[in-house]
Length: 428
Image (cartoon, rainbow, N blue to C red; front, side, top):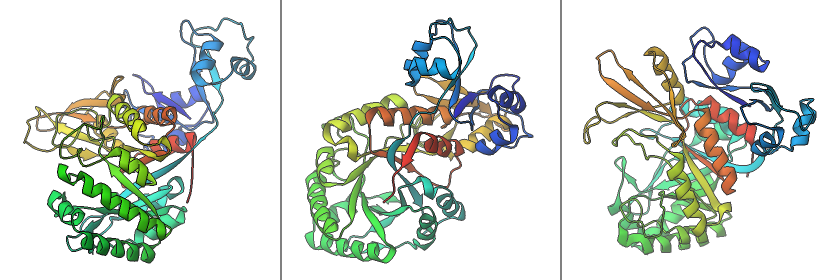
C-alpha cells in the first residue's frame, strides 16, 4: 500500500497515473466520490502491492534499503539498477511488500440506551474478519452483584460472520459515568463480587463470550488493593471456566502517577493476573479539553514504554481512537464540548470550507482550521493514513500483542486497509 498526500493542483486521474492504478480503485479504497475535488493535504491510500519511493537528494540504494528493511541488492535487482549506480533525484523505485506481522486486534461496539445502532452493527459485520475480538460495550455491574443487561444478539451474529470472538466488557458505569462509589461497593464486599462473577459466567455461557474484560475506571485511590484482590479472585474463577480475562488500563507513565483515573490501576498486578490488557492510549485531546491531537505519538510511546517495564509486551494491546474532534474557538474551559467526528467527516468538512489540511510531525497527526457559516473559527484534529501508520510502526517496534479500537461505527477506511496490509490478525 502507498500513502499519497494530495498537493495543490492534483487530481485523482493524475495520482492514478503516478502509481499505475485507476481512479476507480483509489476512490473505492478511500471511500470517496471521484467527482468531488480533493483536499490539499489529504492523505490517500493507494491500493497497490508494495509501494513506490521517489529518490531524494543524498539517497543511495543502500540508504533506501535500510529505511524500508529491504536488502539494497534486492532493490537493485527489482528496479534493474546497478547496485553502485548514482540515483537521479525524483526517480521512482519500487519497494516490495514486507512480511506481515502477527497480532491480535479488538474493537469496542458501544450500545446506546441498551441498543446497538444499525451503523455499529454494520461496522462489526464489515470488519469482523480483521478483528480477533469484538467487545459489546457494556455490561454495567450493579451494587448488588447483578448486571445491567444489553441484547448482544445483533453483535454476536455480525461478529460470527468474520470469526471474531466476543469480549464481555464489564464496567462500573452508572447513569452514563464511571462511579467510584459503585466501584467501592463492589470491590469491598466479597459476597457482591461472588454474585457478580456468577452472573458474568451465566451471560458468558448465554452469548459465548471468550474473554471477560474489566473496565473499572475512576476508582478511589484506596481501592487499588481491593481491585487487585478482586482481579485475582476473578482470574481464578474465570480461568477455571475456560475463559480469558483482560482489563482496561489508564495511560500511566510511572507507578507513582496519581489521580482519579490512575492510582487504582496497578500495572504490575494487572500484568500478572490478566491474560492481556488494553491500555487506553488516547484522549490527550478530548471533548472538554483544549484542542490537540487525540493520540499524539510521543505521549503514546511514553506510556507504552513504561507499560513494558511492568507488563510483558505479549500482553499489551495499544488503544487507538477511530475518531477526532472539532473544537469551536476560542477554547473556553467549561464551555461547549468539542464534537466527535470520524476521519471521513473531517475530510468532508475540510472540503466544504476550503480548508488546507496540515500535518503535525511531532504529534504525527493531521489538523486544519476553518470558519463556519456563523463566522466562528474551528480547529479539527483527527486521524488519517499517516497517523495510523505511525502507530502501526510503534506497535511493531515495541513488539506488542496488538491493537484495540475505540470504537466501531465511525468511518475510517484507510485504517482497515493499512491494518490488513501490514498485519496478520490472529483468531481465537
